[in-house]
Image (cartoon, rainbow, N blue to C red; front, side, top):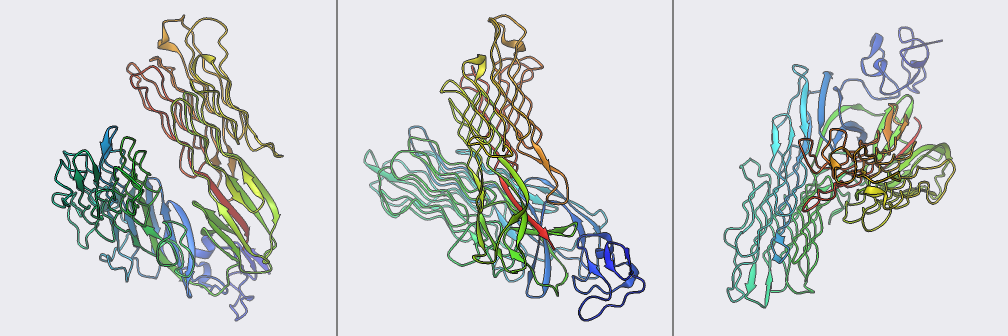
Length: 636
């Protein structure tokens, strides 16, 4: 007996594979000895190491029957790097969805729903499947760009995988003067000038622009209007159908439906990405935004399945498209239209055949260091399928707080080993908290993340003229000039603590002082500062976000839950608050050569959003909090 190449049992050069898998030792997945097949040793049990070797994104390994796939899920830009080719075909399946278009409308009247981001895939059997995509180790690196959703009346941004580009969704149309923008899918038409209530379907936003084959999207829907009485806008187009025409003068058109694709998980279970839809399994993307109506309630206005945001019945704000779906934003009337949802790229390929049974389902599954890892980037269910699994390790990070003037606090960070679970009942709902929105005058708290009895508290919103930094997992930073304190961290208290307070700026005398940073998982946010007298704001500095905490639960050290930096009114080189390591956002600066806009907390880190710069007209915006994450690991 011996140990070589991370096999326990007979050496790889002397062991013989047997039907029960004991002859060649017990395999530790995701190691070089496993994937590179040292000594020509058959692997039993396990996966034949004959697929690609590649890196990038969040890895999800799963089985469909006896076939084993690896999916690389990109919700932020990166690189898909192929370092070795196996004996299986070197073709990959892809899903490339662009950012959705923002809903139409303005503060005085309404517009059309935003078009979904362009949708392109080559998964076999899908009605929109393109041609095969062979990869190579020369050059081996494929750029992945994730398109952000467009703001109100703004087209979404393209998503890219190597030579495949999906176009951003078209913006929703503006009242009276615009019929919706072109894009991957087109925006819905805004309500037209007085016309006696007749449907106006012409000149809606054109989809599949520029054209691809198969098409990447569909056009938006038409609108209606009776001058001074009522009007209703068209829905944005979706990957699976055109945007709905307004069916009546007080009913906006529904967003066009998105399309379902099974690429990130087995068809027999719910996909770890995408949204639910009419068919089981989830995995719907690129739904159009709903059109508004000037007086409700009405039966329309719904966002298309696949992340489309709803339009408004009456006055109010449109609903944003769902994150990482490319959904179009819902349109508004006398409010703010919803922004489009960000895009996503998933790359999948076969890595072998599986002979061993899994112990649980749920999330994006991978293997490292002898452990099976379930990463939940969005809410789902962790289901125990093997009664021998009695305990797990976990990491639960909540959504970060949005920036105000002060930086947003990080979402609560909780982790532990040997947490008891059972196959009876076996199903554990997982909630992944979204980040809080930047708001004026005070940032919004994020949302909690939950696994079983473990709840990580949302990060606190940054303080502003509306109040102090808010309490949370970590607290939001206090407002500029020390008007209010930072929010408390570890609230409600748990042991070990899940976070720290936001910074409080307490000026020792007259002068301008930047806003404070939000708290992080391992340290508090710092106070803002200044070195010049009152009336000279050019050298005020925002406080820095508190540091996050690293975790190696996935097999690699990653830092989560950093606080957002505070914003400043000044223009000096030392002005804006720096983000806390672990996904915190950068504080903004509103004047001079160093002007910058705050950044949001990073996706799936629980980082707090950066604080806004006050004093501008209008003030520079702050950043949103980053969404949280739940990770569960256990011995393979």
